[in-house]
Length: 330
Ligand code: AMP
Ligand code: MG
Image (spheres, rainbow, N blue to C red):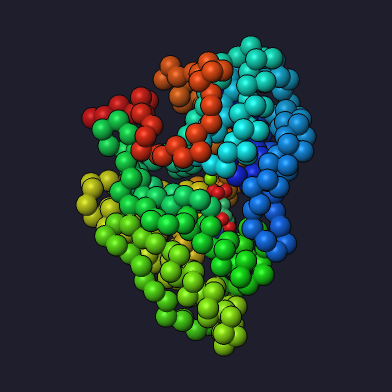
């Protein structure tokens, strides 16, 4: 069985094609980027409208398949930016109607977890899911992925991108901050905002913006200090989660999982705690169509599909609102 998955929650329009054994046939995408500002939602929509056919053509070509070979279409139904989600949903409805194949709308955040489980072979991890808009510590319990800790304001990726904007780094700033941080030498004290299992990044960002404006610090030291602080916060909360619940695996997934320093901190903590650690492979870390296609396969196997009228997008669809019928509780 072949599933074509469409991702369009924010900056990326992606199409992935995967078979039911987990073999990736195509992972094509086009990402909206800027030299200076952040993501402008309307411009991101224009980007998706401009490039979706091109991405589709490239994906079919890379997979060496025709539309008639596709058995299932999946798309990101939420959460995300309304206009962006609608482009993906419209494309998915059209393809499923033309190809006369079932359609499944999936939760984007859960797709980030499941693709990480698929690539790592982990069965029941605690997941640190770090992306642009979302930052959550998740684990399966009693029919759903439960949120054990999360950001109280912005996602860690958005934090990095906004801070990067004040340094004039453009979007996405995360990778550029990682590079600058490697050359940082001096740790600058920043607020350490963790509240129980939850954490917040806005205050740290304000402080960093002020420090940057003062002109007293190098970009490298600011980036280094930003990373060390927020990554330590998330590692601490994840460690607390693993200490409380009896799980033996830690999975790092989402776009910020591409960051080597964050992965190193979590790996070290996992070693200390004697639990396994895995990070999602780079091509599947940032938003991509493959994870949506894989989520479609899993959910379709569990009997889920949607009529067109059930495919309205949901901008605020939380991870812990989704029933997970395909995991059998012990
Ligand atoms: P996603 O929304 O899952 O596609 O993740 C996108 C986010 O990941 C953006 O905020 C990027 O700045 C961030 N990101 C990508 N690569 C890195 C990296 N190497 N280090 C830190 N953040 C990154
Ligand atoms: Mg994402």
